[in-house]
Length: 295
Image (spheres, rainbow, N blue to C red):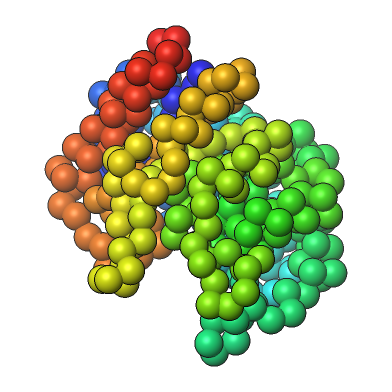
């Protein structure tokens, strides 16, 4: 079992990310941002500095958390811009020996009331097939996260996406379903069930993001928790992964002290660091309780 995490939630700068990983005794990170930019978007000299520093620290990157086709990318945007991201990512991933890239499946199409409209599946799937083909030709595994993009709209949407994009595999995020509408149901959409989503797609999971949360309807806000304390069915899912012989990575994404895509959530550096390390330790304790062998 490989334990890793989005180390940019531990620290803004690389040095803090390395320190948090060492504090946990881990040897891998899931790379997303350094400073205020994605690893795929920083300047070339800064990228070389990151690769060198990680090599010297003995820390590998198990997956690039890219922004390719993410929730902020509309299908109306020129596809050539996305392909430039893909080609740059391939070059950098080869340089840093990163075997896997996380992508998404473009912004959900909704009207002013939040009702789902035509999702332009033909164009969406065409683009995603080309993205995955390029990564696959370079020997890179492409995984899709069940976030608030097409493939996270429901378990049925996720399955349809994976069926339509042959070279795409799944990274399951346990914290996303309880915060995301189930667009397979009538409007107004209920929230998804983490366990039901997981159970529907578990045979296709090759990577796992450990996040836990619940939606506070009274306050109309998302609440992130330590693993096993929210509505993501984390304990049940981890137990089932153990029973099924899952041997991939578990990557923590706490979102408690900082939410990557929400600039309104702020935290001082010490709290951010301490929360990430505590999250990792609580995951280790939870895994021990469930009978996972220590690394």
